[in-house]
Image (cartoon, rainbow, N blue to C red; front, side, top):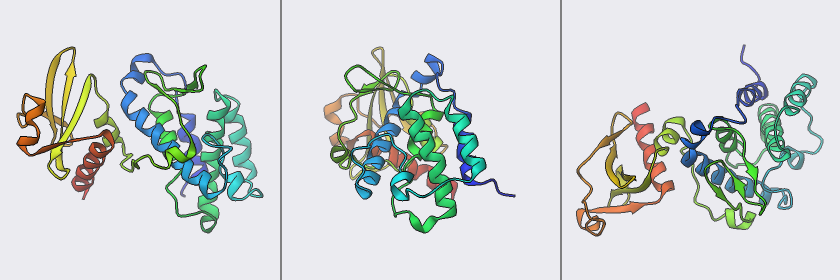
Length: 250
């Protein structure tokens, strides 16, 4: 028998280690940052759909989709018990919303708009290192990186990040200062240059879905264009990595 979607989501959240080990969290800084940015973008889309800008960014959207909706009594009781152990009111709101939206999507799919899943990026964020906190200036401290969330309108202009699979997220996490490149026109394969404590590492995301050494990147940055390569931002690089993962799975 298939487990109800609300319980699948609740069990994912129950498994989160909210205050993770420092080294574990720092090793996932890049993927957690990009996941939080994607959550803020999706939250802005849903807030726009339901005129919920005042509740953005960390809110339970089911209260706006259908104020009369209630989870089953068993789900509601287990969710409430779980939420009592979750740190921070904003995190509790997203956890409650994730479970209730999963329930709503399964029981009343026609009630939902054609928008990307709101909570998947932030649930993945939690799974990859636990909580976030607000700093004294209202910024988001993700452990190892901080930024200001901005406004709903500003986040609507953020480029979408759709390749949220584990392989792609793992491929984004690394040490050092990273620059990404691809063939002119943004074609695969994606390459990167990592500089760690002054030491350069040039790598390509290969057919085995891992980073491998490459000699295709010129030593001097100004020679990159002449080699038929273009720089990529992190989102564009992630999408190319996602394309490679998708091809390998077919």
